[in-house]
Length: 240
Ligand SMILES: NC(=O)c1ccc[n+]([C@@H]2O[C@H](COP(=O)([O-])OP(=O)(O)OC[C@H]3O[C@@H](n4cnc5c(N)ncnc54)[C@H](OP(=O)(O)O)[C@@H]3O)[C@@H](O)[C@H]2O)c1
Image (tube, rainbow, N blue to C red):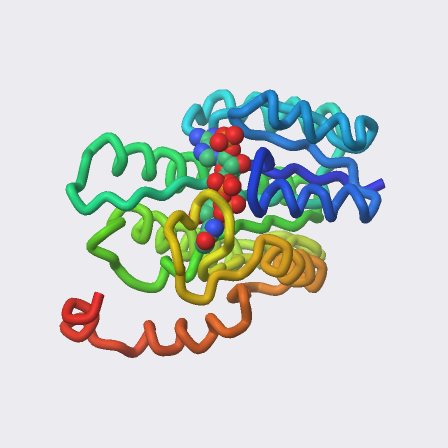
């Protein structure tokens, strides 16, 4: 039976992906801060879901939890990093900026490194992280969120390069870049090209199974990504 860890499985994309994994025969460690939600998920398949409460901002605890899961499961085939936050923060409120950096940069990096170091020892494994289309440019409404996503995609690319140091070619890194997905993260009415959680999660799960290096969700965001990469800053400043 393959084993997986989903960081940020209490709601949204992580919860949905954990559900697909269990349906596919995985044993899945589910983590997050909202213990009650994790325990409710566990009741649906008590022998397949394993609950660990964890705040990724607490990197020492993340390491403890990660090691406990590895000890319990023996080996890990797949680590999915879905934990993330984002705020509209035009006032540059420091608490929000700091919270975003601690979760999306500090917390994410700890998970990435724990996963890759484990996979190096094991000789196999797959690290998946949900970054964002937001990684491609800056944004005056949510500077920390957009910058944190740029950090994630660059770090993931570095880890992808690093996999060449691991013999056997059995360690993979996948960077998932969604546009808007209908979760609590995408607040607001009438959001542009919002994908349903089910549609987005199905596409993400297919990309995970294919072990894609990077993928935009849904596919139409490839076009937006292409435009974002070539538009000059002065024009972005005018329109965004
Ligand atoms: N929805 C979108 O439009 C969209 C677009 C692009 C990228 N993304 C990315 O997709 C990822 C998943 O988000 P989602 O849309 O599924 O939203 P979500 O439902 O809010 O899920 C976020 C998950 O992150 C966990 N989390 C947040 N802070 C945490 C912390 N300090 N420690 C541990 N877990 C923490 C949450 O669990 P607890 O609150 O229980 O801790 C929750 O399980 C995020 O990284 C987000 O940036 C989302």
